[in-house]
Length: 171
Image 1 (cartoon, rainbow, N blue to C red):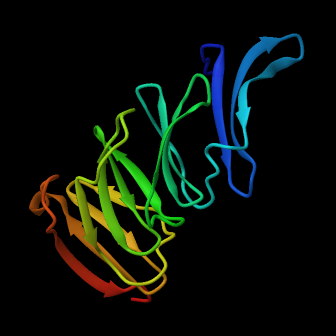
Image 2 (image 1 turned 180 degrees about the horizontal axis):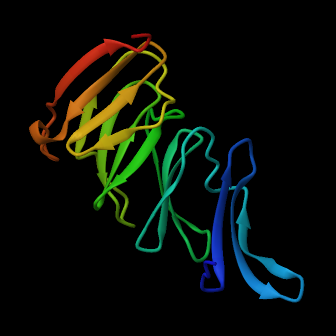
């Protein structure tokens, strides 16, 4: 038997105008009882990607914007418009690795201050809706046309060059 500490919070996000909601579950007479902490159709409208949480802030690709939302209130801290589309993001240490729908890789600090690109590199062709995978120093990106393995050792956070190996995604 496993136990967990209550209350438990669950963050829900959804595109198509539904947005985000933070639920808190507590023990009640009928089992776990949910209570909405906040709900907003204006933030966290994710479609193909998952948000990440760091230091009380949620980072997400939401309808083409990279945004930062305060986890406790659901209030938008900042929103960065660029050609992200419905790409993917990954939290690596204290940085956000963002792969746009159009095959551009960006690295940003995961901070509540509005970020600037630290790295912006083209990666692969095609529609990049696929989840990123990181294993050791290797970042795998994939589209409907091809995939690539980027070596983090040869990519410094302030550099715009990386080692890329490509292969068709049907291989």
